[in-house]
Image (tube, rainbow, N blue to C red; front, side):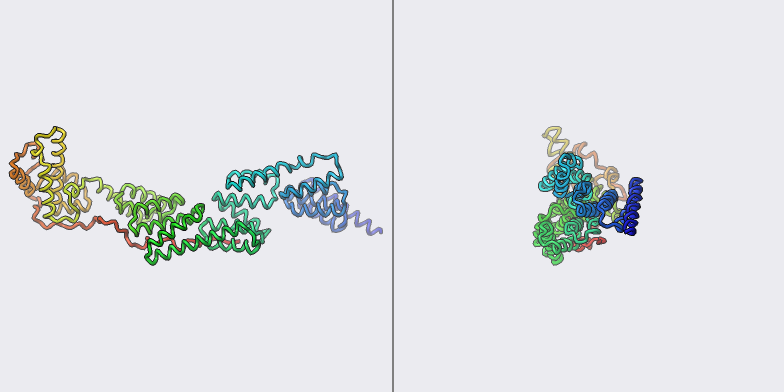
Length: 517
């Protein structure tokens, strides 16, 4: 008997010491002393009640709830036990459990009606309803707002944390969502919802394989998990379509690849990472099919989803270049250079700028109405034909404005013929050298002058001073036009895309590095 008294006294001393530590906010020390008291006197409800309060302060609400329930089981009249149970249930987000504990407490003290308002039960219920309503409407941002407010009342709520994580994933805040999911999985490794959230992060981060594995794992733990089932189906479809499109591209079945990539793009508009790759791949297909405008639009769509997507940026620049939209090509290469300072990009930018400069000069081929591959005879014939049309003396009876316009065109014809009939000048012009100075210093060569005079005689036209004011004697070092013309080796008029190694779709960029927990 004395031994029992001694043990009870020792247990009470442990409890009192624990109370002192608790008041001093040394909760770990208090927890140890309460546990020692329970070990000495395991049937004393108050000890469990005190340890429950200590667990609450340490944030272990599940352990606190278990102690509160144990204290009530030992002593049905233990009021603090019901209060702590209600508070623990609320902290864990269990609205129903909180209501039950409050009702049980009222059976002991019917006069106390303040507990429900005091612990924030009504606020939590309202926030839960608002969050659910916003989630159903796919208003994830507002849902997240209500979740955060609800978690201030119920910081231990697993369901609220999971709902928050899912909203974060849908708002593309993948790392935050992933951190919540991993934290939950560390203490609840078989929680299907946490595994599903983790799968969302992987799926929306262009890791289809691992995302799919997580959805399947969640379904093994919970075969009726509707969200995991829907996402598994979507991920499978997207994976199959993307792989099918890639295979069709590799085998040269471009029209089939185009249709397959287009079908894949409508499966999940929210998956920006994968869709940016699909748009890029479709751009390559459109490029192969000669649909250059559509290819540019696809690259633009890819960049709208991922502005740092270098492949899409460089491909769009290349397409602009091939379509002779040199200003746009320069813009894209300049943007690319901000992210990639390699010599390749620098050279591409330099060439695009060079072509832009060339494109702003007068197009002598266009003025004469010939192609860049025109022969010497074709250039002569084109010049004669157009000179007859635009010679100023043919427009003597025209208005002053029309006379000036025809004289301008006639002078341009002279400039064009002077350059294109001279093999050396033509070669310099084709290679993009700055000919402004040459154009102002040189005029018609001897053969050009003969042609003009011949045209004038043929139509009994007298050349006015104004019409011939730009004609000067040929200098001794001028190359006459009976030299063999050089062919154009630098310009390429066709719209063919280069079949270089860069024009490959993003086949296997779906397995990103990811450390699984």
